[in-house]
Amino acid sequence: MITPELRASRFMKAAYNEPTDTTPLWIMRQAGRYLPEYMEVRNKVTFIELCKTPELAAQVTLDAQRILGVDAAILFADLLPLLEPMGMDLEYQKGEGPVIHNPIQSASEVDRLKRLEDLSTLQFVFDTVKLVRRDLPADIPLLGFAGAPFTLASYAIEGGGSRNYLNTKRIMYNDPGAWHALMETLTSSLIGYLNAQIEAGVQAVQVFDSWAGCLSPSDYREFVLPHTRTVIDGVSGNAPVINFLTGNPALLPIMAEAGGQIVGLDWRVDMADARQILGPDRAVQGNMDPVSLLADLDTLKARAKAVLDAAGTTGHIFNLGHGVFPEVPPESAKALVEIVHELGAAQRA
Image (cartoon, rainbow, N blue to C red):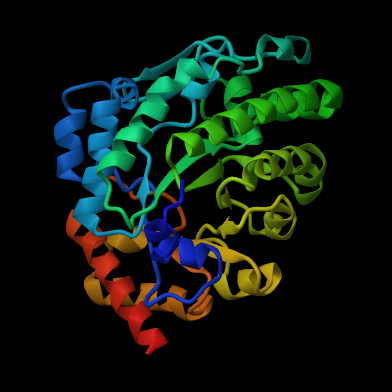
């Protein structure tokens, strides 16, 4: 539910291209290893235990928003637990990240991925949403999220991270019918999952296409665009959707066709060019290089100002072009929030 206080928040007003007193911001991975308060909780449990324990996931979500003073909280969760009830054997290995032990190895195996019918298997996510919304300030939106169909399909096929996505593209090229069937299974599952997050209490959702940057524009248009568009269309009537893709500026015009009230930009995209491509009716989010947070304070301020100047004063939500690195000093992240609020207010003055 979007209360009057939430609808009047900086984030929601920027999402709808309405004037704000300053530029709102939140930071991807704002509850992360760079924060001592996060590590105090994380050191007591494994990563997946943290994700699946609503009280702890809510605590780190709330702590990050409070400590940084950002204009939105982002739900502490992960992209991949969605795949477990769909038939994937998922494990988070120390030092290795997520591993799927039974990846889809050929087109003939795509029907092993089952449509997500029983959302109660992900109740820990919705319980976390409810706990966070209960304790979050009344004027601070809570953002939910999920992986985009291509990114989840790639995990299911590759079994983990990949440099060249050989197995994914092999299925995609050699059996388009099987590929589209796989994507349709993910698409319908994601619509239900994201709408359940909204029903539980988030005010907006971000769709992460973290791996689609490996594709050419023609491949993205043929194999990805229809499915991402279906997900966004299936959700956007209920809450603003942030459509975020990383790694390939050439995809921006086509990716924007998939929809989204807000288009998330990574640092490889020129902000001013993006605003021209997207037009005045779309809000944008981004897009400072995350490594900027390792620079000295004067450089950080200059880099933030460059993004703000290119984005303009309406319809911009400041963010990094991707998540915070663990090496970032917490003081730098806090300073960025103050810098953006100060410069954003000065712009409008």
